[in-house]
Image (cartoon, rainbow, N blue to C red; front, side, top):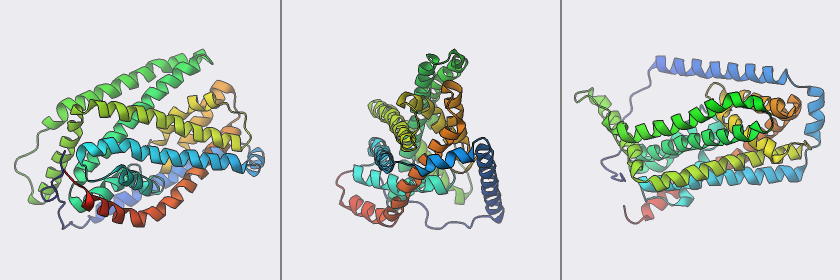
Amino acid sequence: MHDDVTAGALPADRSAVAPGAVRRRRLKLALRIALSLACLALLLGQVDGAAMLPLLRRLDPWWMVTALVVLTFDRVLQGAKWYPLLRVQTRRFGMREAISATIAAYPASILLPSGASEVLRAVMLGKAHGNVAEIGASVAMERVLGLLALFVANLAAVIAAYEVSHHVSDALPAAIGTVLLGFALLGILFRTADRIPFPRSTVRRALPLVRATKRFIAGLTGYRDHLATIGLVLLLSAIEVFVVGLAIWCCSNALGLALRLDMVMIATPITLFLARIPLTIWGIGIAEGGFAFVLATLYGVAPTEAVAASLTMRFVEICVALPALVLWRHVGVSVRHAASDAVGP
């Protein structure tokens, strides 16, 4: 859509970050670390440590390998579902580059604040060609559609859980409301985002940011002409929720827990949603607490067992992320080569 390298290039000179901004950033990080530790301590205080250790000691290696394979497939699926959105913005890169950039940026979702991996994806692919704003629009749209798919999956989980406990009927209006609100906001974005007024006269040093913001918004609103692509990515995002639930179920089997697949699938959407709340690092403590709460409320699963499955899943995520660090050094080179060999706009 927007692939002009020279006109879209980012400015070469960057002003130094203000000391006040650095202090605020460090304070925010310190608060998130403190809150993460507090949530983790509160969570572990609700479980029986003596009962958890035997569970962790009897981990089945074959189920753990299966969980690793499933979660690795999830990372590939995330890159594959991003590719149709990326292709709308530029045809410089193939699906291999999209998947490589997604996997290479994955560790940032663990180590850095929420959204950092998305920013890195856009920078890795777009910096050399001056289309970070357009690629960033494709990443943002993928995140929006992923959240919408999560809302739909959560609604499906609430409906399925109603057969287990009628108490969840209280959550049904909220689940329906989030789905309707999500699609309404997407429609509003498509119709009105490109009408946002920008001041004609502004500080000279801010002009590149204003131009990049305009291109980013133009990239987002351009997807209204690609509704089939939107539908495809929504479907793939829903499948991705199922794949993550399957990985959690494999972890529970590795511990020898009697958690059925349907039980885990009902608890997975709310767990993934809570993990996206940027209050703690990596959603630690909040996601595990939500997973344990749903299973305890609906099925009477002991918190110790639910937390053990969640922590095992965290370990699997780290194992999948570590090899991605190797890609970090090489993905930039491969992406540049692929872009230089690309044919067409």
